[in-house]
Length: 280
Image (cartoon, rainbow, N blue to C red; front, side, top):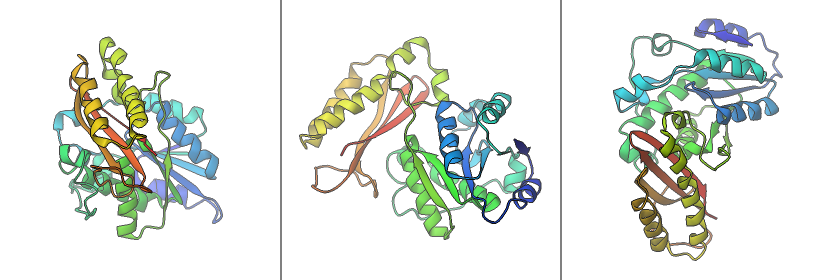
């Protein structure tokens, strides 16, 4: 496994690969867990070479304390990636990536960025799209892999690739869960013991909402979810939304032949957890 800090050295090494060699990219911000590694394994299955980027992107944080508090576990991350046969790792500095101009581009996501996460995290998706675009142009992969836990982000990336006419296939990888159903996240390590015991309720509530959705009464589904968290002492509901899977348009009633997902964001004190589930 080769580790690169500069764009020039990385591109030089990538250019040595044969024309028929395919490259898969897995962008990350480090603090890697089994969820990340499952995505890297998927990329390994589908490509001759795999590159993982580890870069904590400042332009996607709307709160400075979240950026400051983001965990740095680079040594452990590199060990984990080497153990599963990753080929390249790109760990650039902010200066290397942004060249002294640390700000986001502006994109027209046609409303995808205005709902759910976009309502609560100003400028977040412009920051995400900016760094992902830069990584795509630096590494020029054939495929790029993203987890469905950040489903809205996944749609934003697909939209950006279309807007910028970047010839990359975006591959969605299913949510990797703990044994009790909690969606795996680097934030889970920040939960207290009581919060960690309560956190699986998020996924259990999604499963129950999926069951209720079969009756087609969205008002009942939303009311049920709200009441579940009123009774929970450790978790506070930020939002629960049922939306169409492509447009993320909020659903107020069930329309036949339309596919929906349920999305949820919950606070355990200051730790913010998100999850989602396909409803039909």
